[in-house]
Image (cartoon, rainbow, N blue to C red):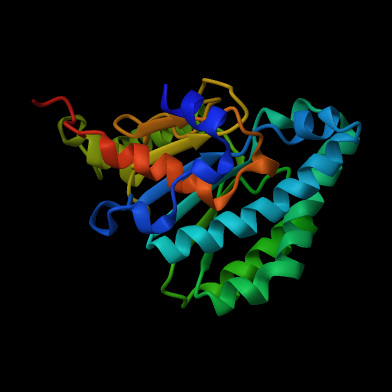
Length: 254
């Protein structure tokens, strides 16, 4: 209802940053950046043009989130299932982290942003891994927003690997079956150094999680928009947070 009303009124009616309650800014926001290809197709452009435009949105939203006081921002950049896409598109996507960081790393450092990566390095090209490792190293002492790229990431694989590690600990006598609980599971996930997301945003009108942080999103607030990722602006981020602030998070209680 609220989204349809704002769509009729126009972008100018989207909320501003000063309309948000500063004491209730989500600590961790996760975003499924969807719709780059459809945005390009709608304009008669190749899909890679949408990915290039979406890269600019990453910077814009990262800076906006940092200014709002969000501490962790996880961006779903490439899933373990995305390898099924045409090779030309995959090759282009693998070049984007390097291009993004070459252009934007100085700006991220200036804004005290710390870069991290969550995913499997296997199968990733060396130039992709090198660019990310350089950015991680250069920003490791920054104390502002943590920009966490989920790259070659799949939640089911993540959970399977966590279960294997736990089973190994039990087998080696470091852990008993009775000691296995949610804390043990969480500390064996790739996101072990991050709090669970408070808010998940997905763009482009799709209403699914697409194998993204399935364990971690158990009690996250979900917000979906029809806006394609290249069109997603700071004001859409504020809209998502304003809706988040309207909700009561009871975690199964009353």
